[in-house]
Length: 395
Image 1 (spheres, one colour):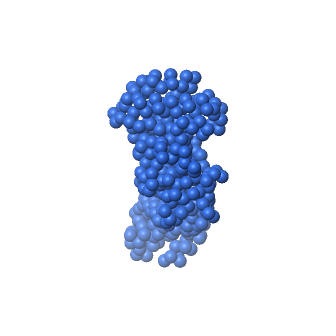
Image 2 (image 1 turned 90 degrees about the horizontal axis):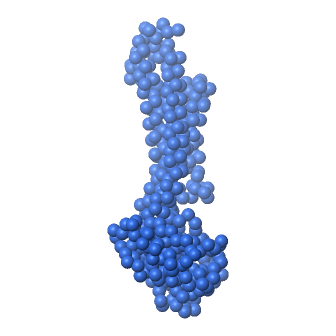
Image 3 (image 1 turned 180 degrees about the horizontal axis):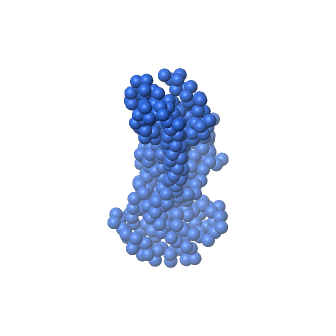
């Protein structure tokens, strides 16, 4: 049976070659879309590492062209701004940060310990940042007054970076090289994903902005944990209280929820575009399958009528048409499947873990075969309704 169907497909190779190419490309597109969607869904279900609810961000523009230049006066004014913010009503806690979660900018570099030098994201923060953002410590402590005057600058790392640097060793007290300067690990927090729910877990390191130290770059953002129920009406009062502290600077308040919304929209945009492209390709494949099968049934009216006259049942004819379609789909999917299975061996696609790869391939296969069989139902029904006597007289 299979050999006979293969011969029939080979005899019509010109009419099915383009269709098979469309099926193969559609499989790869659906596979890619399924893999990315499942990856985003998996990441969304991971712990985020901080609490964004009820957190406001005060963006400070010091009218300086670069963040690498500052004066002692600017550092002092930023410290005064932070102190004033901590005393405001409806502000539970406040801290300074160079980069806040969901922001599109980032800072990164290498951290060296013995022969290991993993790449990591970095943020410069003040004391109480852990309280404002709801960080979960898993070992040690966060920055505090005990770090004032320390001979070696303290750092707090996340669990992922701790594993990359030290494996199963206790990270507390370890000295690592950060930007050609020795720093000491004083704490470990849970995985911290700066870029939001859809981002992959990354290495992360916090450095301390010491209070009353004008030699270190000041924060450029304040993060404020507000009392639950604080509305946007308080934003104007907040600015009226803080603006006189830093005359000549520009201040803007944004709830962290707004930054989160913008980041999620940015991350979902490629998926939406990919979904539209995949839907268009699947529609083209469906129309192509329907047209080719309809044409095949019309051209093979005498053949199918002869089979019916020879005693073949309607179910047998129906099964033959669907089996041919199943075979065409399988021959088209096979090379595309081999390509998909090779992707995890390439460095840009190493995030395709075995479980994610299997689920993505399975999703793509089910969708492509379901579409093929659905498109074959009507043409195969036409074939089964041919009366043998009428089919044998077909011109």
